[in-house]
Structures are given as C-alpha cells and as structure tokens.
Image (cartoon, rainbow, N blue to C red):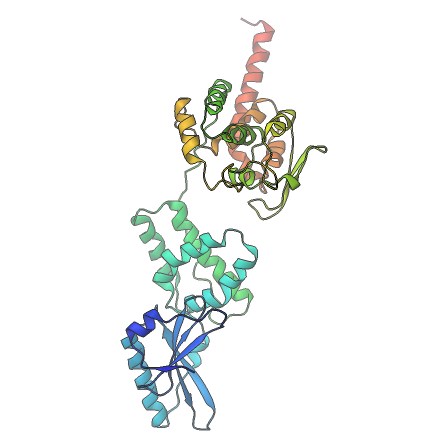
Length: 382
C-alpha cells in the first residue's frame, strides 16, 4: 500500500506496474484518500473509511477525467469530516457507474474478444464520446444530451456517417448494459435519434477500355507485385485487405477455392477461382518460408500500404479518379452487364445483406434496357 502526498503531478504521472491488476496510492495528508490506477490508464479517486459499526467501506469520489485533483481533494476532505463526526455517507448513487466506468469495466473487455474493428470503437470513444459524456452516470445521460451532441458533431464539420456512428455506438452500449443488468441502463437515451442522411455511395466503374489502360500502366510499375494485386482485386471482387493478408494455406488451387477465414462481417467466406484468377496465381512469385500470397518482397510480410505505386499507376493511365475499392465495384459491374443476377453478385462479393448489393440494381436495369432495345431493332419496325 504505497503512501504518497497526492497532488496533480502525481496523479498525472501515476502508472500501474506491468502485471498488476491495479495500483492504489494512499494520500498522506487525508486519511483514506486513495488514487486507484488501472492498467487501462483509468484513474479513480476513493475514500476508504470505517463506518459506525467498524466495517471498512470505500466510497467512490470520481475519475480523473471528470474531476480535477483539487475538486477530488475537496470532496475527500468533506467526506472525511462526516466520518469523523459519525455521519453516514450515502453511497446509493455510486452504485450506478459513469459511462467511462462502464466502458472500461464492461464494454471494452467485451468488444475486444469478438470485434475485429474494436480499435475504431476506441478511437470514437476517446475522441468524441467520453470527453463529453464520460463523467455522467448512466442514468444521467438524456435524449436531449445526445441530440445536442449529434448536431454539434455535424456543425464541427464531421461527416454525417461519423456523427451517426457515435449515436449508434451509444445506443448499442446502453442495449448491452441493459442486457447485462447494469444499474442506470433501464432507459436508452439514444433511442429515437434521427440520423443525418448519408449520401456517400460514390461508385466508379471501369469500362473495358479503361481496364485495358490500367493493365498497361501497372505492368510498368516499380512495385513488381502491383500487377498481381490489381488483377486479383478486379477478377475476384475481394476487399483490398483480404487480398494483402491472404495466405497460401487458404487457397486450394485444385478445388479452385479461396477461403477467407474472417471477412468484414466476422465470418469466413469462400471465393471461387476463375480461369483468369488461376492464371494470375500461377504467375505470382513464391518466396521460401513465406506464407503470404502477395507479400512485400523486401519484408516478406503483408504490405501496410500500396498507395504510392497505385496512385502513380492510375495517374499514368489517366484514371486519377479511380480508387482501389472501385475495382470491387467494377467486378460487380462486369458481372451485372454479363447478365448475372444480384443474388450471384451478393454471394461473390460476400455481402451479408442483399440491401448492400442493391446499389448495383441500376446496372441491371441498364442491361435490361439494352436487351429490350435490341429486341425492338430485331423486329425491323420502322
């Protein structure tokens, strides 16, 4: 039980030793005044005391994000005076955690076990949600608070989808808290918030002529792996990260199937390997003791980014507006224009919801219009 004279400097620099579940620093000035430091970096003030019956109790004052040291010290002095005078300290309110406490003790441990993109959630919490709401107890956060927060994000210039995602996360956290029986979560303040309209589905589709120009450009790239990467993205419709992280152990050339162990929705999916894909895979150079299909030749590990070589190639091809993800859109476009159904496109792209694939419905309509025009011309009607 380390004892130290607590001050703002000590509070700011305190770190929980590696391997320990927590560090308690006892103040030498105020009996029972404690700073608790968790491995996650969360720091909380407490007052430990004995009640009128001699039973040891601990009263939570608040975390360092919600209170300054001087504020916490003042509360501790006031509470300590009550103890000395024999007055009871009411702790009923403190049975309801603050949002920051719920996140640290329940939400983050949960999502780290199952959610691949949990680091994105941490960024949202750290940069947007906790600085505004972290100090509030779960039952103190209101619908009006979240509405104001939602509109404030929009006014600050954040994208509509970013502001909406913050509300979605709050709603999800309260749903989980209620499911787990956490006090203060009986009402979900994020329910009924109207989301901003998101209109960022900007798809760009390569024409066959543009695809040929791009092919010629990537052949001249200083990155020798780019030609394989671009070709496989265009021929399979897979996501960039799925390809860059792909391992030979998941590619069955004999059965013509590529197994992606964990897709965007967290579930495995399979991609059939066409003749064109097999041809590319047979040309891809192999490296001894390297499990990856298209690694960085210098590190034999997956590329962190290929933006520079891609950007150079697309500009040289006169396609500066084409994003790498547009290769996936183009794959879907070529499928639709060759007469394949939206159901087939959904399965080949690995969409869990058909609604996601519906964005390509207009391509299907254009194909059908071409077909009807061809039928009219064939009649010879004039």
